[in-house]
Length: 414
Image (cartoon, rainbow, N blue to C red; front, side, top):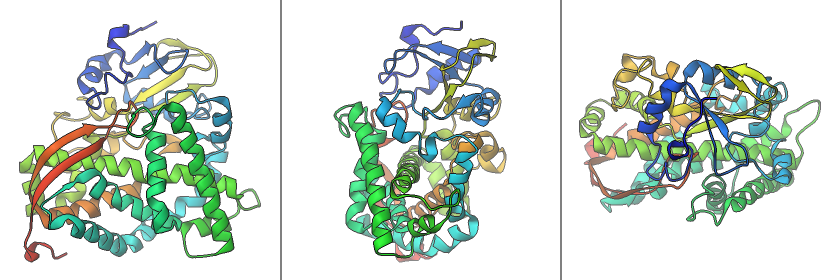
């Protein structure tokens, strides 16, 4: 068995103290598959680094199920039983039927119709900080737009949005004491998100209104509509996917642009480069570190004997930084997508049946917000931070204070 010594174990909180340890991942990539123990469960796990191996695992749910979730940790049985009835934990064909209930909301025509409202939101977010000459970027800008977009889509009352954000943070960042007292608090926050979603569904039934929540409730699944509880599980998945990853990606983007002022200057000269900049940051700084799948049977895979129940951890950043796929992969280059198949090769959004349902919305959020930042903020600089969130699953900042110079009105026109 291809084992990793304890001192070189990858998935430990110590290794992720300053974000994803990309040098360590690069040093392990040639080993293709690696077994290591972990501090989160009784059994260890297999690490996968190769794009083809990762694709095979993510695209073959009959061999590698998602029924135990995408996280390394094994959930308590009572929590797992509830989560296994949610979209994120399902395998085909049931997963496909559930996913079809919201696919329509993220199609290009639906997204294009939202652009004017999204741009207005982005401008109001900038308006709130522009005269100060500085801001705490994560909380004042990066998380605000995706939260407002999802709240508007789902019909969440303005007064409830922050509560939903806090629950999402507690669930995803349960290893960080600033967000949760322990891992169990994260599991309980997940259940509370489900219960909030169920209450949201009940409120929509009592007070019908125009929202994606209402449309999903009106849709038919297996000849019937979703119950409030079933919608709550749906809601949990959509909120986390729609807010957490976008917030972290935008924060990384601004940080890399500050570290590479020549790249920001290119955007200032040509806003048409913004979509390329977003694709490059999605490649360089994938915020979801890994995806877990669980073997459904004993098998031979990648030259190793895999046992039923073994956890296979797909290290997404290994693909995104593979020099066989990307030239100078550690370099942040916003023109790269015009020369290389960045979107085709990276695995930031996964692959297979669970490829991110809101991928187009996420890209649009990022593009609209970055365009408004470039139009209105110059001379970007880091004032303090960044402070990394304490997590092995989500690579992002919990604090990044930046300074900037407000642009003249001439730079603010669309």
